[in-house]
Image (cartoon, rainbow, N blue to C red; front, side, top):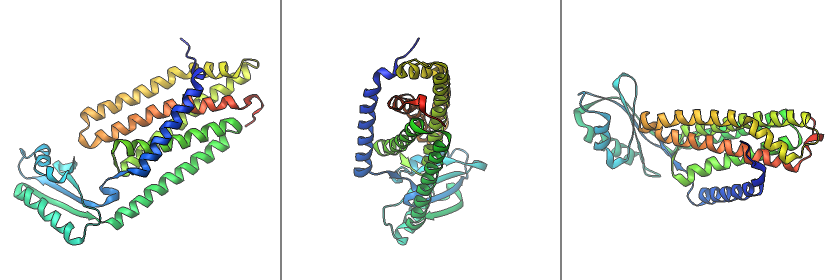
Length: 287
């Protein structure tokens, strides 16, 4: 079965433009839902004294503070609680005291840390720097690997991937933390790899079919690699489904974001990076 992807190239431009506009508007109006890593908060590592004091009971007891709880080594539990914006030292200490009062003597405290706004700001700058550096390195790789239409198509879809990933976090309100940056970078890396595979096949077919119209040639190349693309995407998504249902609460948002990045990378590889090639004379492109 052959799919005619190029038939809908104009529609792909409109859909992409609308999604980019929504992402930018959401980022400007709602921003990102920064997690404790970036916004600051309280981090506690505790160990329940009694075995029947489970992580679910602890989450219920601390529900007033909307905590993030995660099981760690040696039966310990990591508790993370956010703080109001601009919280003073006194407010931070008061919140710690309130949490300890609720937990009482049901736990032992291994570690208590307060991530202040200054440290959170440093982490934000570090995360932005990591994304910018990766963007520059990927752009350099694209330029070295390709020329002409290939380079333009890869670069445009790379920018689109970044914008849509940030827009996704803004629109959905998922917590944006250091894990989110890892998701973005992994998703972009996956997307770039998919584009390279498709481009290599297109270049092979250009050398093989000298007179085939470009729309047909691109469709042929994408269809030839479609099985590989779909199987890779589905296998990754199935792993994320497993993480969502059985990986615990802390991994659910990771699974959701990673699933979106895989789907997005697959679609931009087919409908953006490849479609842009239509506007270039690839038979004269040398790289």
